[in-house]
Structure formats: C-alpha cells, structure tokens
Length: 88
Length: 97
Image (tube, rainbow over all chains, first blue to last red; front, side, top):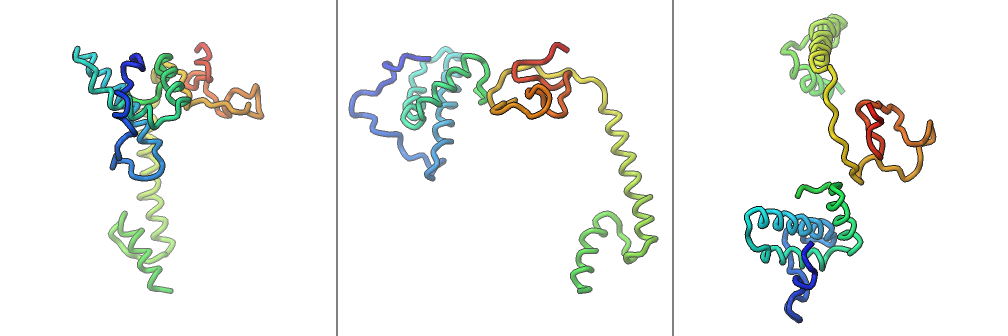
C-alpha cells in the first residue's frame, strides 16, 4: 500500500477521528471496517481515473486510528492473496 | 374459547379458500386433494425443471468459509457429513472432479 510516512499528518493536527453519526454507539467495529473499505475503494476509483489519491488519506487516517493493527495486517494479507471477503 | 378459534380459522382458511365449512372431515379431504396435492405436484415439476448439472463456482480460499477449528469426529475429520465431491470444496480446494 502507500507509504505510511506520506500519510502521517503534520504533528498536532490529527488528534482523533471526528464523531461519525453513522456509528454513534460504543461498538466501533463497523466504523473501522467501513473506513478500511472506503479507503481501498477510494484508491481503486482514483487510480482508475488517473487522479491523485490524496483525498483518500482521510479514510486511511481514520481506520489507522480506530482499527487494531492485527486486523489491518490480516486484511492486507487477504487482499494480497485475493481472499478478502469485502467488496472493493 | 370459541371466539379465539373462530379468529384463527379466519386467519388460516380465508387466505387460501373463500369457503367457511367448519372443521369437518369433508373440508380437510377437499383441502388435501384440491390444494395440498396439486401444490406438491407443482413444486415437484419446478424441481425437475431446475435439475441438471450446473457449473460449480470457482474456488477462492476465503477465511470465513470451510472453517476447521477442530476436526470432525467422523471420517478423516475434514469432510462435512453430506459432503458432495462435485459441488463442495475442502478448505484447500475441490477434490479433482
């Protein structure tokens, strides 16, 4: 995927993801997964259209804040192997 | 007692047939021959029309399917009870058919 250093925000500008009214309750699993999907779908669409993927950075930062690293690693592995179950 | 039964009869019987002839044997014989058996015939016809070897889906080793946390206590522990070698893949893939 994209270099993680490119996506690190300037220091002090990204405390935490903002409130998302689609996921108002304590269980934020769906929030994490949805942003992961949105990031990859955004990448795919931008690359297909030949545009800059800079707007996708927001989703990257959200899911990196919310998701356990082990989940992200597992999903990335599945994407590499072609066994990821989500629709990207 | 009678009132709830009547309401129930209205709910069940009037959906299929317009008549209200009470719970006699004649009613149920009519329902069996005129409704149940023709329905069975229609469903059988539908099954025969849909039968035949369909192409099987290509195998992708998804992690959420064919989970084996513990071997099955029959056979080699890897086949489901009604395993169909043509249509059901093992966790590693189809069995060469």
